[in-house]
Image 1 (cartoon, rainbow, N blue to C red):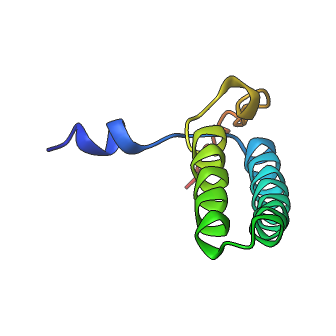
Image 2: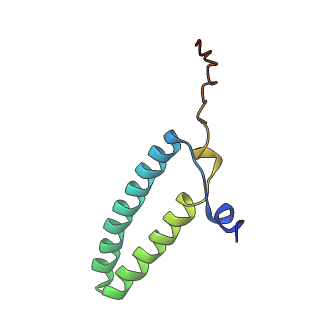
Length: 87
């Protein structure tokens, strides 16, 4: 049971989080507009739902895994300073 979080965790850096957020918004908003257009042209609400479902799955595949594109700027931690306490 301890290995389960390691299987479902996809760590990315802070810059990668910003990129993922922007890409998510871009894909979902443009996909919603495209889905409405598909539904309007075909005059079918179910085509709108199918088109947006496809966009949603595409967005999941593009965003959820920790692609190397999202890990180009790793966090560099500072080394701890040794402090001597004089009594």
